[in-house]
Length: 328
Image (tube, rainbow, N blue to C red):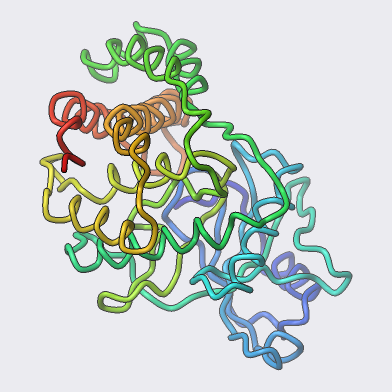
């Protein structure tokens, strides 16, 4: 399970007591994720949360890795900004002093609204089309968010991570991985400065999307959100949603995602021209982060390591076929 720090029942009850959400009823560790500790929390639901239409279930996150606490006002403020504009994102629960996060066991913790829905395991074209429209709406709604955050996992960072891993260590994971170092440096040389920008999620995998049927009920896990090119966000989502478990490209889902996005916001000619190269860079980001996690995660950690070759193979697809994806 993705719970690095274990909190006892008394600690959890004391923490929940700092919020006006009622008393703790239960807390269960959540297995998904590799960067933070997460619990599904249920409370009695009394207090301001219930009065404001909130429920009795929340996600408690303890930030463990790759999170600069100085960024938390951006992440949590963006959620509140988007929620106020009707986007399907969870609200941040503020404690009794008005703070959106607290320190627990020397680590930052936040309590987030629980949203209904199920993450699709094999997205359909209809679901992909719906998500594309929701993502475009998010980009438009976020353009007047006042804060800015640089992308800490940009293409240059991916190249640096792979360099730090080293060719020998990467080869021990898979012999094809060392070639990704040079590819990452090529991606880092791309000039994306002139592309249209907004606040972006940049990690919109199916397990970060909640759906009921074909309706998106929640976009979650905004802890890689940043200010940057909107087409990069679309490319990350395309790479995450348009391939099956064997990394074969699903043209129906890929086309539907882009169609849904463009039904709300049309891509510019420059975005279309660079889409394949941006998608390749997006894949390399996950090759890098997963390779780093693979090498750094202890064997006895209660975390399932993700294979970096999954996105190396998707990079190979975009490298071979990507230039024609948005033709026409």
